[in-house]
Length: 194
Image (cartoon, rainbow, N blue to C red; front, side, top):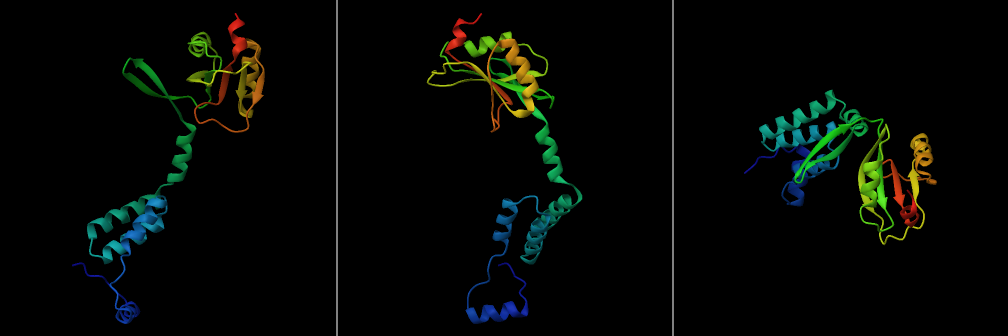
């Protein structure tokens, strides 16, 4: 049975209430899971584990807290968000995850007209410096009448150049897309383009 260290006031309250001592470790573990970057919570958990007679786990939690205090994990996370990755298919069942340049604009090409392979065909033909096709998708039920380029404000220059090249209208998006910075949506008018 684990021995709990109880202060004089805590011992008095336990005697009056006639209830078993509370488990302080579990709520602290949950707090650490909710906010894993909070060094103070890890220190509290380490102290509770030491009081519960678990010195090895307490040392591990102290180590976690000291690592968080010595190193700015939040800054590392922000740095990682700037780096982008791309999945390239090397073979039928083989892919490679490659880090791409942060200045590269990620492009999604969406088929909104139902012509089989239209998005893939445009992706093969489209070669623009600073632009990388990262996703092909469908806009079902394939009823997009007019093709367009959707972009975010930060990619306006690239979008204008692409619009002039492909003779497509531009639409600025206010919300970002997790997959791409810019999107070309192919509509029914694209069937008649050369």
